[in-house]
Image 1: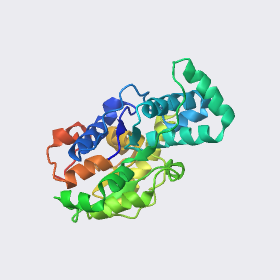
Image 2: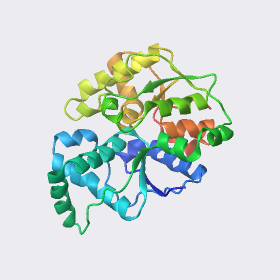
Image 3: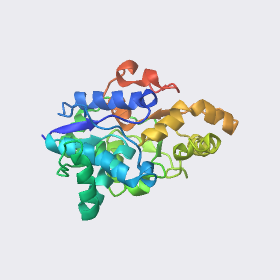
Image 4: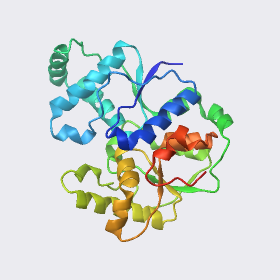
Length: 281
């Protein structure tokens, strides 16, 4: 089995703590050599590239180099950090001028730019390292009586280059979870405009949440830390904007799999830290 780092320095850790805790617990349960990526710079979000491209590339090249030096690939369990790291690697491998500029910047931190590292999604890790057969053995609580609304967000178009949605589908099929059809799968969760216009952000988030609620989802499955923040942490505010009660639980993939694999202790999974109660157990 390969060696990895688990990239868990997500944005707004006080709000995304359940995602982080669950990912660590899942890695521990599966006995995968993937300690937390200590010393890594925290995720900025792919939207930061439009503000300062060179600073963005330097930021993630620092992480790539750190991991490469220790001969560990990087596991990203949510979409934004996956896209940012993988996109940085791709850009630098295909632009010698930028690569030279970033190498010069890293040299000031006494680092030699090194891109010999893979950036992989949690889904890829599970199916490539463990395999569907081994994961099936762990299944204790199939989700046959539930259906979820899968929310991938507006960043999913860029993410498709670095993560395969069919891998996620395989995992959902493995735990026997159905997905409801809804129009907002690739819509905005509102996060990217929150700082500029909180009202607009909440309107966008409320629109998506109502769509998923009205299509009879039992809970929302998100792929990005930003979506988790908007739909869980700010759900009460989204309800005020919508003028309706929603009360729709939000889960990350790691939380969902831990439940399916038999972990029912809410504190261990991080479910006790959700703003919207998870009532599946």
